[in-house]
Length: 187
Ligand SMILES: Nc1ncnc2c1ncn2[C@@H]1O[C@H](COP(=O)(O)OP(=O)(O)OP(=O)(O)O)[C@@H](O)[C@H]1O
Ligand SMILES: [Mg+2]
Image 1 (tube, rainbow, N blue to C red):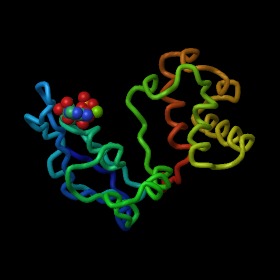
Image 2: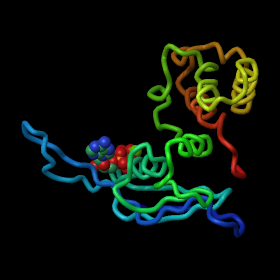
Image 3: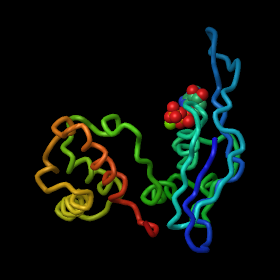
C-alpha cells in the first residue's frame, strides 16, 4: 500500500497513525475455533496536517478500508496508536468517541449502500444532526438544504428518494450526509 499527500504550509499534525495493525480471526469447525489470522493491516504509519489530502493506493484487499475503519474505531485495531487533534483515539471512552465522530467521518464508496432507500434525501442528511443533537427540526431542515445547495442540488431534491436520482447524482448527496455535522478543517 502506498500513500500520496498534497502538502500545505507547516502546521501541527491533525491525524497521527503509528504502527496501526489489524488482524481478523478466521474461525472454523463446530466450535468456531480460531484457526488462522488475516493480516489485513500491518504496522501502517502516517500523519496528516489540517488542509492536507492523503491518498491511499493499493490493490483490492490490501487494507485501505480497514485502515479507515480502524482509525474511526468502527472496528477495534489489534495494536497501534491513533491520535486526532492531539487526542488519543484508541483509549477514548464511548461518549468522547461519539463527539469525535462529528469531525471524522467516512464517505462510502457505494452511495446506494450507505443510504436508506425508504428515506428521502433531506431526512437522510438531517439524521446525522439529530443523532448529534444539533438544532431543532426546522433548523436541521435548513442546514440540510444549505448542504444540498453547496453540492449543486435544490430544495426539491430533499424530498426525493435515492432511486429517483440519475446514476451520477448519488455521490453528491452521499457527501452532505457525513459532512453536515463535521467541523471543516480548512477544506
Ligand atoms: N470483517 C472482516 N473479517 C475478516 N476479514 C476481513 C474483514 N474485513 C476485511 N477483511 C479482510 O482484510 C483484508 C483487507 O480488506 P479491506 O476491505 O480493508 O481492503 P481494501 O484495500 O479496502 O480493498 P478494496 O480496494 O477492494 O476496497 C482483505 O483480505 C479482507 O478480506
Ligand atoms: Mg475498500
